[in-house]
Image (tube, rainbow, N blue to C red; front, side):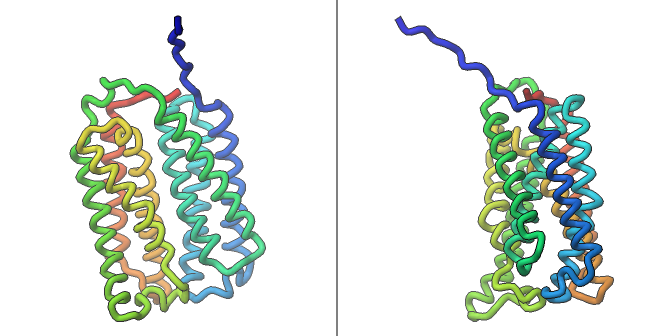
Length: 279
């Protein structure tokens, strides 16, 4: 006779979040401080791209690094929320440091960019593997704002996808470069690549799954909301920096991004009223 043996639930090692968070904090602080304080570190980039790179360094140092410290210190007391916050930051790190690695001229801290991507990506994949294979308490989903969150994800992905396509399609038809590439002097726009290939499809599919009240989408929604809030805040900061320095930034764009970030945070905390636990 065959005996049914229930497989034990795999748990996230208790050291994983604090150790990886501390490692990422140190690396990101090193990258940011180098970019901010080393004279002419981004000197081979265009003025526009220098300003954006410096602005990203400031955001990483003042926002991402402190949030990682919070994750390292708080992971035992509020494990569910801390894990969601950490996963959102990991996606953000993969996104932003891929841009560092591919779209800055080679420099002395190139390997640090690669190491941040490596640690962030594989920690993200491992936690998601464990996380998505755990049983969920259906009662925790009873009051979750599936429709609002799903509609917000669909609207966000369609709007940003449409915005990028409005820049790309005319350039493809006329066989010219999109205008935003001229000011940064890059072969392609890394934001277009990452958004259209990975981020926006992921958010769109999650939105559809939320409308269907899918359990996986219930788990992924807060992660994407945190990522969206961080990315929108970054865009707002960079837009202000560019505008102040006489480049192509806009206070209106910055205001719109802050509004979207606040909406994301509001939906995030509304969703966390229906708490779930993660081992």
